[in-house]
Image 1 (cartoon, helix red, strand yellow):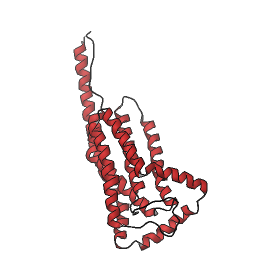
Image 2 (tube, one colour):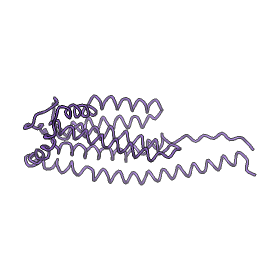
Image 3 (tube, rainbow, N blue to C red):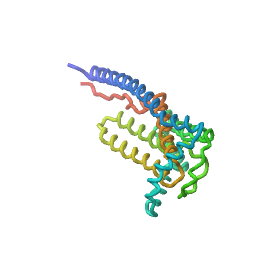
Image 4 (cartoon, helix red, strand yellow):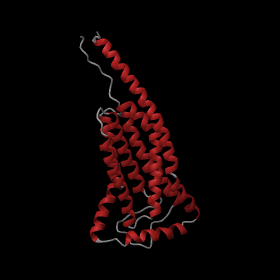
Length: 255
């Protein structure tokens, strides 16, 4: 007949096996995210290499694609697009990042909170700003700008920032659900669909409003997704596994 101690040891052994299994799963995920980063950066590199020498041919194609969005302009759609684009402006990115990091700190997820904050700061801030300064591409000149926007245009800061901020948030939620004791895969997929559509319409709003070329948005999505995937592979998986897993606590009565 088993007593409380034997049951406790047995369950502890099961949790150790589960812990090792999840660590091995993360090692596989790490390789996947590294491959994703390598492939995700290719569209950015395509435009970056061509644009480094001459933007002319890219810009001609940009206007052809952009004309589809410019033809859709109406006062109502402009109001909606303006509201959508504010969901990824610099102020919103900073506020949302601070809120998420603060929540993680309050939950004593220190390294994960620091990882998320630095991920946004370096990727959406320093990296995006540095690339923009390097290329110095001016904003579309032959189409009316429906919002005031300064600075250079390639890659789109809204597209890149939304990918990192909202994509990073989706990663945190997915990891929290994964380590919970409930089956929340369906909810994870729904949130992924919603956030994916949100990121997409933010990028499209920049084209519609006339402040970015399509290649700027594609380049921003590409570089942002590559940066996020690389960051997840290098540190995100490790920190969330160590800080999101339930604590091993046992309280059994003796039989």
